[in-house]
View 1 (cartoon, rainbow, N blue to C red):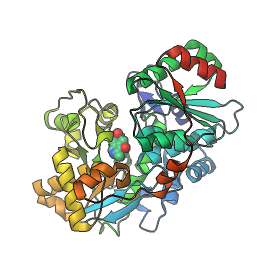
View 2 (view 1 turned 90 degrees about the vertical axis):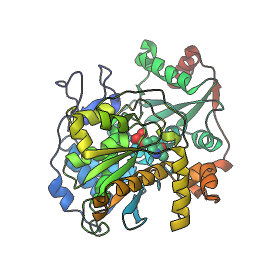
View 3 (view 1 turned 135 degrees about the vertical axis):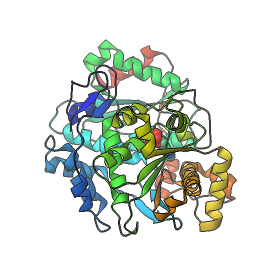
View 4 (view 1 turned 180 degrees about the horizontal axis):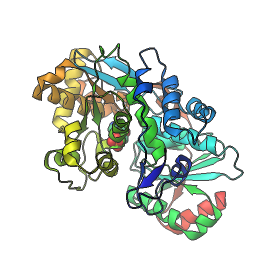
Amino acid sequence: MTFASRATPGVAVTFREALFTGLAPDGGLYHPVESPALAALFSSFDDSTSFEELARRTLAGILSPELAEHDVNQIVVRAFSFVPVLRRLDDSIMLLELFHGPTCAFKDFGAQFLAAAMEHLLEKSERRIQILVATSGDTGSAVAHAFFRRRNIDVVILYPSGRVSELQEMQLTTLGENVHALEVAGSFDDCQRLVKQAFQDSTLRERLRLTSANSINIGRLLPQSLYYVFAATRRGQLSGRAPVMCVPSGNFGNLTAGVYAWHWGLPVRGFIAATNANDVVPRYLRSGRFLPRPSAQTLSNAMDVGNPSNFERLEEIFRRDWRDMAAHIDGIATSDERTLATMGQVFRSHGLLVDPHTAVGIAAAKSALDADPATRSGQIVVLSTAHPGKFADTVLRATGKNPDLPDRLAACLRLPRRSLKVGPGFAELSRYLLDSFG
Ligand SMILES: *Cc1c(COP(=O)(O)O)cnc(C)c1O
């Protein structure tokens, strides 16, 4: 598979190049140029196929001949020490739990694969690379854990002082070794501006090998297709019917990865784009007009995005034909009030605690079932994107129950915190980077 940006579709690059550059030289996102035909492969998977085997064979189908089977196997083994879990909620709805990785959110799938692929492809290299990321919370911890102890790679994470939760800060600052946390006296926007400036600075570009790991990197997107393949090929659990996939969405990377898998031949009956009050995509699906606006704060804050960057990738898959997109994707927005009510109801009916992002997905699935009873003849698979323990306050408010914090998260609260305080000016960051890695 090769990749190209929308502005220069004729200039295709390899997976390796897209991985290490992140963005195309023209500033655009990379889109897959080819669409591999994998329907036969997918139909060979069933309930007994392990996630690891399914990942190896699907990725080989996507990345060969650029990567040999041996390379793909190495990357998969190094990336996935955890698996998705498909469980039934009720007659019509199943949950695809994606929070069994090191930081308890689905972003572990993308971040771990990106880190493992970079580590493997750097094996024969003599120079180290430096991953530079700005975070407002969760993305940073998934990236920090993914790159921890990877050879030939240093990670520098910038986070806004006093503006991330205590747990998030501890996840970023207690790893140490090749993971360097910078506490910036400023806002998340300052952190992003500093990172952007660093990538444009000619001295830094000459003396360092700065690399980004942000969510638009194709190396984070492609592995997210794998759990759609996993869910839709568990035919026994699904009673033999192709499912509808319901995806709690913010920046729309997760949904895009599912639509890629469908495009490659995965039997899926359709998608639901489930959003909170930040509903620019559901509005687009109804009207054909894409009108980004400033994001609004909600309880499902990892989905508070007013201008989703992966929207253009979705548009490309459907050749910018909104009617075609709307024929395959249903957009449903859910208020905070209904999110809380859904969390309460799921707990009372099933004894299950779910986080607010998953609840937005469940609420959307229920709306779809109410609007179109025909949907009931199959299954809706709702992606469960985070562990409820990460959103304890909201879970307590909705259900009266305090969720457990998984041990792997709680462990960091007992470790010493190590971070370096820096100001919001670029000169200080530049000096730090040159002194540490130049
Ligand atoms: C990032 C995130 C989302 C949204 O995923 P996108 O790929 O940005 O649409 C949903 N839920 C949780 C818990 C997240 O961290």
